[in-house]
Length: 336
Image 1: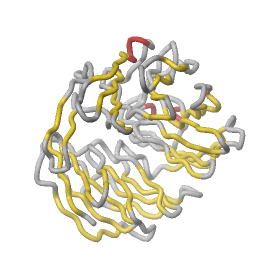
Image 2: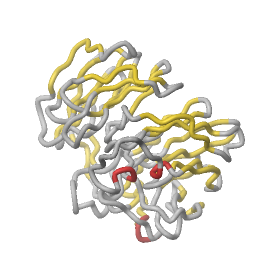
Image 3: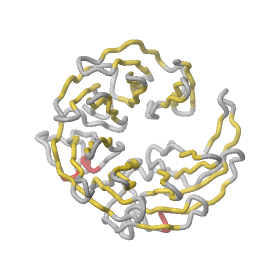
Image 4: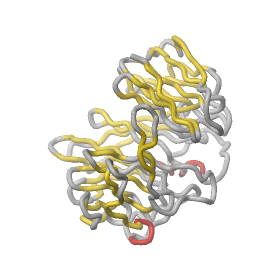
């Protein structure tokens, strides 16, 4: 875990826990910061809390061992969610699926029933609806809606089991390799995964107990770059193969394809002030794009000059500064 000041100077570095070393051994999750504390998980499922000023460890829990977790091909890569006094972590396995730890001590507050499933590579989403706080997330197989207060799994759907018309799969488990956080709006939940698996829109009932499939889409199968909702349209890049993808827009209400356009290759996406920031993964170009369903309308673009390997980190924007990471390099650009 590394802390830098706003000039890029390293303030401190602290070990988290055992890293994932078996395949693509680089970092797995984004730290979660609240006040003077930082919460982070390692690739092998250690959940830790640090002092944000000094970098001293406050507590650590080996979530994989304690909850007898079950990881997939690429270990754990969940960015931890904070809800009130709780840290939310998803170990999966035979013992439980999602757990809540005390923010101050790391002690277990609750653990959900087990779905007997494997972890995905998804960071959970907090939804506040009807006076209740909900955790919306995806495991290897299921879309889940969980009561954040007590860990009750309110509703579930077998997303991995959805079928599409495309016969080709890169490997048999492709539809169970989920990496993208769901998008929620007005009792609607959209999820997408790569490798030609369908994206899907669900309606969540007002009592949160039922998920109903509204539509599926075969255009926007996002590999691991995320998707964004802007003014009634979903934007992201799809998976043609592990090296190639196109930039897409689909309608939030119907799943209709608005466009599917070539630009470099697939990558990650964020939105800000009605604009899209698209960071292609192969050569590190980032484009400023108008968020319009008419076309992939590029305003400008540039290439990051530093770093090695694929550009898989998602961009971030804070106070008019665009932060881009490429391997071991972190760059900050004034965009205001």
